[in-house]
Length: 519
Image (cartoon, rainbow, N blue to C red; front, side, top):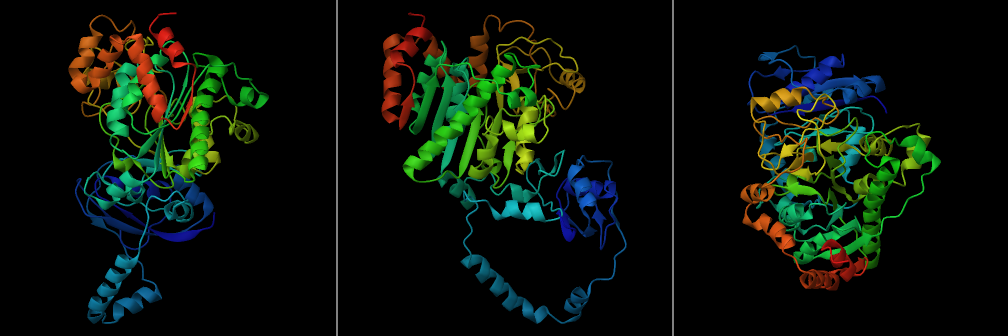
């Protein structure tokens, strides 16, 4: 990394303050004008930063951007501008404004830029070579590159699409090639499946669905996917014991994994297997996807996946539930970043060679991205993981909070279940502040989170609780599964098989009979 001079621009809201603190804490002097603002509304602030050596760049990259105390309006000293700046300011250039404006307009109009190419984007290369750039952003997001250990404030250039349906970039995203990779077991798919269809697949109608799951007595619930028009590939496989290699035994830990290292390998195999399915489909069809969304079968979505979450050259994950690494319950990226992120098994030997040992799934995931030079971004997402597991309440420092499915969210992949909340408002703050932030903690402010007492089972009446807040459309999946008959189950799967480009599963009759208890 070479030293370089650059500019830093920030605003509105807290970004200017964050960046100012980062520079101050890095012990780097600031040149030119400095403006820092009291309050939350202003246009922008610009700093020019001096030549930075590698240690200084490392310090900038590793510092967080938490907003400190409010800063008052001030203006610091200005240095003598360089020769070119003085020359330009001395000339009488106002008559040049009209032709320059016309030239700029023609340049922009005639330049066609594809923000959603599957090739490595310019933004990715730029962020690896520039000193530090932070621009205004409409949403709170954090980012990190391979040189940083902690996330810092994300440039707005990392969010190229806003939420407006009429925005041309939004429309371009909707037209781009997109793969949705759905992995995991169908334990509560009657609750989560309709929400995934509504809030992801129907939002992006050009997306192709890839399903990779183990065969068990819950797999019959996948018949709910018969409404999906673009079924690319389905694999429902008999789980087999995977060999545990020496690199895997060194890199991974069985601690806090319900099924030990074998459980991690089974999960990694489902994730990377989905990538293999996507690559095979691309080869057969002769194209490449622009985007890959990797989400879990047991994820319940209470709002649509917005276009602002597609960030070229970066891999997006939710904040919270990090367990010392990165939340691996959802990932969104272009083809290049997703290929690294989904290679959960094949990159373990490289982690071993890099000296990583005793990692859980989340820390292994973070090491996977950083060792391969993939920048990551964290952003709150409107989904949670529906769980039947029981957890102590109230959770202690390393405990797991379980959100009520009726929470407004976004829950960013926190564990959840349908319940009558026992903890709301100030109670939530008391509980969450007791949790270790780098472990099971999840964002909870502004009334977005309600908590269940999950030390026991779901209890009676959970169906009515779910139907009440989910609404008739999303509750229809639960009602359909509860009254499903064998013939309808088989017919639904056969209809899915006709539409799927590739299908690999046990006989659908076997899937239905096992799930309905007819064997």
